Length: 228
Image (cartoon, rainbow, N blue to C red; front, top):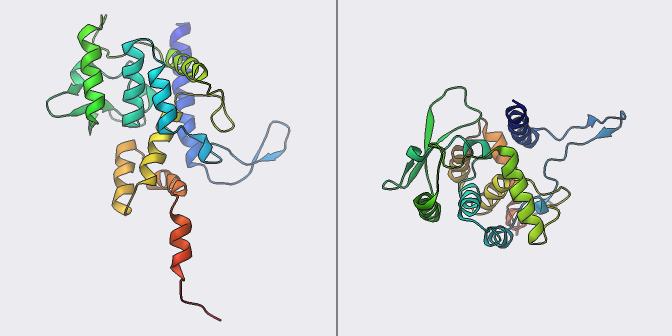
């Protein structure tokens, strides 16, 4: 019962991470009545680079942890949509898709997502030797995943991500930021919304601020044209 309560708490914290991203940049009262702005991700340092994620994956000492981190990093899924939710039968290796149960959806239907070949390959390799007690691909708790991730981060010298300690949800943020950086048109952002299963486009639009070329776009907007 205690483990189940802790698991529920971790899932609520994961959902809260997303709510914070949606929060408007208004000031809120802190514990001492001080007005403090919400700070889900203050700057680009609040996510992991490809090199950092690769170092974390290389530090895994077993195939289960490696398969788990690769799956989270390359799908952008919430941890609770993978841990104790993803079943062996949800993976279609022939079609190259995985069916995930979306955490924030009210209905119980699983949704179909195309995934990177590396994800399918490492899941197939892992499942060949995994001694599963049931049909859960990863039969561990959300809390345990966070502990594993923090330990891996510390082992490769990542003690902070921006202003915060390492937390597993940062892999989802990192996925979204890397995708947004490469978005070439509005349709790409809609696709990212669908991939992350956001209920509102405004939530996805948050990640556009990490586009590195916005300064170039703005500087060229009035190039050769002046009002005075």
